[in-house]
Length: 107
Image (cartoon, rainbow, N blue to C red):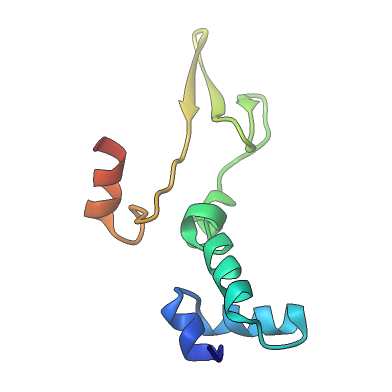
């Protein structure tokens, strides 16, 4: 199969992402490479649509017990209490497809 921009779009990549892949490889990717990029750069793995919003949240301070990383974030809310935040994405993330994204979390 010949890989081109339309094939990349059919794999869920955007035009600029396909161009970045070609730039990184210094050539057109083959279909296997395109599939790997498509899988690794999707919302489930890379948080590409939510990363912008997550960067706006505070990550350091006297009330931050556990900042970003592999574990849930923990914020001290006073009176010896804390609140825990954990984001879990799915192949149909709630940000993109709210009803089906929410359904994967409950069923």
